[in-house]
Image 1 (cartoon, rainbow, N blue to C red):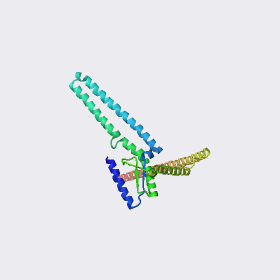
Image 2: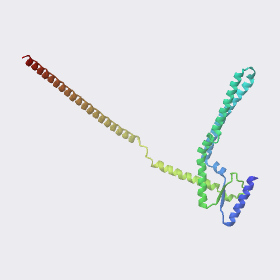
Image 3: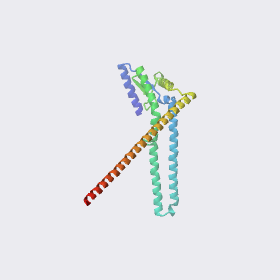
Image 4: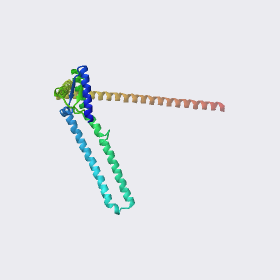
Length: 263
């Protein structure tokens, strides 16, 4: 009754507006459109498979909890108080884990919500973009969704633009495919076997040249180090000789001084 009341109010409002100026109204059947978009069906199948998998996991956990409860009920008479409390605590923990898992899968921000957003939203955006394009081109003032909560007491088929929306989506898909094809054509073509061999040979020669240069550079560096070492050894030898000569002179000077003192 509430939906019917809102529908009547909406129709009266539209009728009043129509009398003021010519309003152009159209409607779509979103369910019909989505059912005829292949990408939506694929996304829905993927989502359904995930939901079935999650349901199986939850059912498995629920059965395990029921087994624990049954075992406790059957054995309660022969168990000690501590064992009963231990088993009850285990059941409580399993129930908490079950609720956490259920929220993880089907909660407001769970995996199902996230996956639906990832899979279905881009397709819904395609539909809404097509509706926007058609409405702007044909200057529609209102576009209603027949499959929504809004109750349409009567709808004239000539105002149904669902097929037009599908055609617009198909045209957009064709344009996108042409763009992808052009991009694919603009990509560098794959080299032939002979070209690949030539490139490999060229790279091999460049690598050999690089290795030769590195070998020469390394040899020059080793030679430079060797020369520096030899030069340092010569300098050390000269310093040693000078020290020996200096020491001999000092000893000779001391001997001379001693002789003079003796005289």
